Image (cartoon, rainbow, N blue to C red; front, side, top):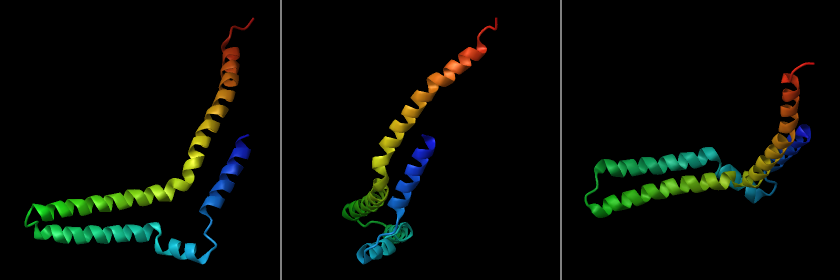
Length: 121
């Protein structure tokens, strides 16, 4: 059962991480991969720090800086959510399978342990 689950998990991983076959998706993946998105977010953050070094002249500028920072953090979190969303359907299934295997094996292991610790005639 474990071997079948491991093989199924490996096949699902290979299928989910396979590079896209159509040119548009390949271009998207090469343009917006993890490293490039982090570099873009770093650029946004550096530009915001340059604006902050000048100091806000009024409350409106401070408000816009806070709004920009919130937007940067929102972009990062949405990108991460979208990146790992392809694994989400399998997490619940993996938890259920783990609980089923543990539930099937626990009585056998506890029964064996109890029989070994019992008194000998």
